[in-house]
Image (tube, rainbow, N blue to C red):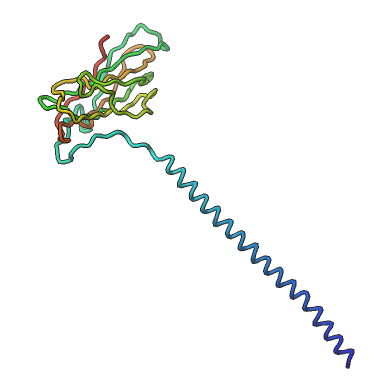
Length: 218
């Protein structure tokens, strides 16, 4: 009888130790799973922040704009419904294909008998070998300072310039509002596409106007 009881006690002790170890192992596994889950959440949050930062850094910069009242008629179009005009400026034919030269392009806006207080002009080269290297203001005191433009236009072939003034002394009729300096490569005619996006008088009232460009006189 005593022998049977001892055997039973030994069996119970033999099973208690493995059961305790199993509980510890399960507890450890739970801790490991919890830590891994927290690490995954942390990495997901960091990744989300990184993506947001990249998106924010890659957001395109806004182009300069002039405030104009929408209830006024649009500025007069030039060659088509979008207001685009293609202009050819003559160049020397006797220069070499890799020769580099510099020219200045005068930008004129003609607002008729209406005073011009604001404008926005786009100029883009349609011919290879043209780079914009500088921008000046116009001949009238109202636009004597260089217009607003995107600095990325430098050493490129396209630029948008814009200017406005709140003064009372404003130009009317045909006036040179800006001068764009370009570096040219090669001989022959250079072709440019121009667009007058905004032409406005005081209080942001749109006025019909015509845009033209010409090679600056030395």
